[in-house]
Image (cartoon, rainbow, N blue to C red; front, side, top):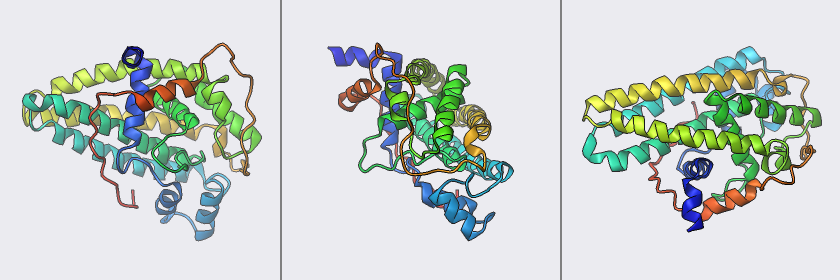
Length: 295
């Protein structure tokens, strides 16, 4: 069956897990609520209002302050994802068929959470502004690239820089749809997704082994999650903090970025994304509890 074979491809597996995790409770971060809460102790009401209406950069908030706030969010998400991973390791080997997929889902969910938080602090637009559970194709593309940066892939670093450059030059507050879904950036999105799909398989195996022994597995699993999640989040923070979008001179206006050239002979992301809506990912999902507004 074509659909079954499609899901075996590393990039298809990654997209399926990403889309499933994006539907978990508490994964999507409300941009305005997060910025207001995160900046409340550090900025004036006028600065916060402008950060919400435009961007933190346009509000004149320094990168040094944004780094401090970002570190607070990274610590919060790291502690939370590590605790949940440890809890999943308590039952031991008998519960592996259920706990490993659930742990992978909540891990990806927390990668999505910190990606959104860091993006909003460093002046990226709202990634989940649409209604319903569907995820915009461009959003999936840019989140894939963020994950690639977290895993240390150079192609993802380059692609995220190009997307930021497009947005900065065009002073727009929407993602470049064409470039991310069928244009100049899309081949790098596919390349990152394929790499991430392979890494997820390896990580799932490692987490499964760590959970085999009850109680002890909890300590090992939680420690493994902490040791991987924290440096990945810091890697994304460092990269986003160095992009042109954090320049205080960057102003945003309503409108969409004018995309560059289109790669005609590459299949569009929309077709891959559409396949995922009907595919059975075989990934159990564990609810990610909503955090309070202070994270």
